[in-house]
Amino acid sequence: MATPAPKSTPGNMATFNILHGFPEALVRGMRSSFMADADYHHLTQCETLDDVKLNLSETDYAEALADMNTLIPTGLQKAAVEKLVCEFQYLRTQAIEPLSTFLDFITYEYMIENVMLLLKGTLSGRDINELIAQCHPLGMFKESTMRSIPTFESTPRGYQDLYQTVLVDTPVGPYFSLFLQETAMRGEVSNVLEEVEIEIIKSSLIKYWIEDFANYVDCLGGETAAIMGDLLKVRADTNAINITLNSFGTPLNEPAMRASDRKRLYPALGHLYPAGTSMLADVGDEDELGRVLELFPQYSSIWNVHAAGGSDGKSIDDAFYERDVQMLELAFEGQMHFGAFYAYVKLKEQEIRNLVWISECILQQQKEEIHKFVPVFSFNAPWRSGSKKHGR
Image 1 (cartoon, rainbow, N blue to C red):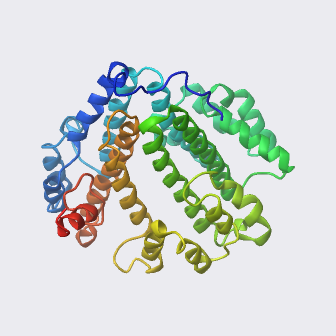
Image 2: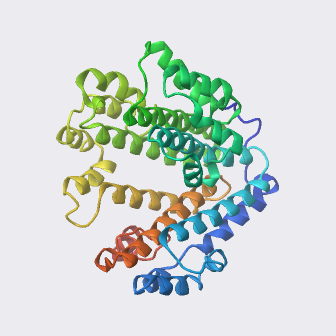
Image 3: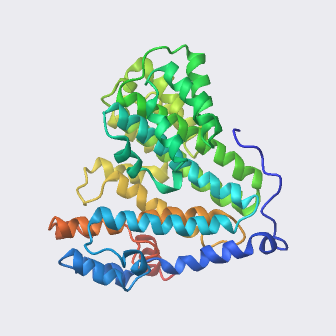
């Protein structure tokens, strides 16, 4: 475990509100800021992006978009993300241990993505200023650190120097250290220049982060361990499935690399672990992957969406998003746990994806595709409309 065990627990029914009642009240109040079904309906009826801006002025995004003269999808995304970051940082300032460390864990994922974006971008010869502008605000380091990351060579020695000189003092430094140790133990000395290798590094770091986060919430115990534990298990399974699916047609799918390189990218937790991930390590094509996932009911239906080739307009990513939204919404149903903070960030990300999708469809005049998004806290969601049909 890269992060030390918490020195205290979230508390119980008698003490939780004394320690964390105010930030929890804030995040539950923020739930009311999500767009309603009527808001989405009005947006899908818009003909221009000016109409979109006008309709958004009646939502929680009004202030974020007030100074924007012309609405474009990238500008909308940037403003919405900045709004989310501002809200998150306010929650962080109100938090004490162990909630403050829990919130920090949420940001580590974005730090990893930013480091990998900078490394991958410089590999392609892109301008450092352009890359920094694309980095997620929740995962930013000091500007000097951000500018130092791309200056190291994309070789094992270069990554060692990057860790020892720059990343060692960052929160994601321990994960990079674990990757370097694992690489050294395997005796890998070849240059890491291909983009696929950058993705392997990213998958390794995300794996360490998921495992570390899961260990931390397990130490917290109580409702936080139960709810966040399940969310992270599903996240780990999603990573394992995507890594396997994306490896087809790459060197990672070669028989000699499946059980060595690909298998070590799977997080050591989840509903698929260990039996399912062991079977995934032997998978060589989509048919074999489908046969493995058929053994796990919670993933067989998701795989069937992919196997159908998007005939109903859905991709496997859409199916994952729907499943995630359902689980994240349920995190708001319990009380006296930290899962709602994680759920709020992830659900807001989904809402931002929805806004960008709708605005892109309007901009490109693809109105027939405009309804292919996953609304948050929707009364028309399949898992809610299904329960209504059964009289529940």
